[in-house]
Image (cartoon, rainbow, N blue to C red):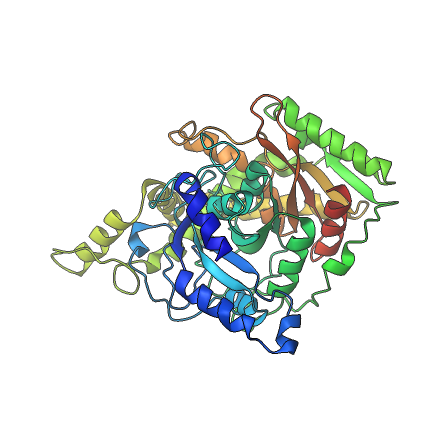
Length: 449
Ligand code: GLN
């Protein structure tokens, strides 16, 4: 009840929630009050959690913040992560706003509402998991789930001053996550603290027979990894993450964080990720190509809204998609369809896949000698609502430091590292680890925090 009171108190300003699950959630909470003793030891017993609205929840509206799915009121199943949370006795509070189909960096591409940054409501919360980050930052829920294809958990975490983890590709089941770019998408937790984050990931991670890309790799106890000890840790700091275009005050905060880790016995050296300059271009080829294929299923027949007054089947497909999708989604579908079309495939899609391999090899090489890579999460702090929405290329550049991590498939976390002295908005520190080594990422984040 306290959670819903807090949401009512703050959400007129913040606009984080698209759908509330109040009646069910309060009923579940009541049932837990009467739970038997061994249930009370379940890891998330009674913990309220918000879910990004591209994660399918049985019987609870799931819209991807798109008009095309605005009437998808009664999904037939739970995503695997939602099932895991419910098995751990967490309580699903409701569904959180996002950029439509997770395409964007400010949550302004939502067709539902504009979510505002709780630190200053003139500013965006980041995106695409802006609702998830804002809900945690506003104290509406202690935990939320987001999804990260090119930065969508870490960048809003950075802009809202919370902790956000993108796990290794394959660590968390994508079953029931509405697909944007299947080779990049991962679900990850947004929380107030690193410990909370570790405790959520250890519940949702693991192989799943419903997702053939989920990996058969043991899930360690991430909360046990939080030893506070970074003595002897070797940190790589890519010089490309301190290039022109990165805000000087953001750089200063990150250098200060490196000092803190150094005082605890870690060492750092400058390295290079030479192919990271191609990451944004590579990402927009691959992500848009995959999106154009994935979003073909939204035809007005199988899911969501169907246009009225169509003359025939093709007309019905076209009208449903034209009315249902927003501008950014259409832009991606066109870009992806073009890149995949015959005659262009080798020049664009295949070339992008080759560059992706080079970007991954940059990380492989660095991880031969270092434990983690550290830099800023984003080149700037949050910007004002309306400032970038008419300029897609500027918007895309928000993810310049998070995208390489998705392309390489490695884990990355954003933790708060101070405030910008001019606009007083939070700065985020990004810690990137080896494949399936979330434990070290959490250990470093926790020692710094
Ligand atoms: N901002 C990036 C995009 O629009 C990343 C989005 C995401 O991670 N879902 O594609």
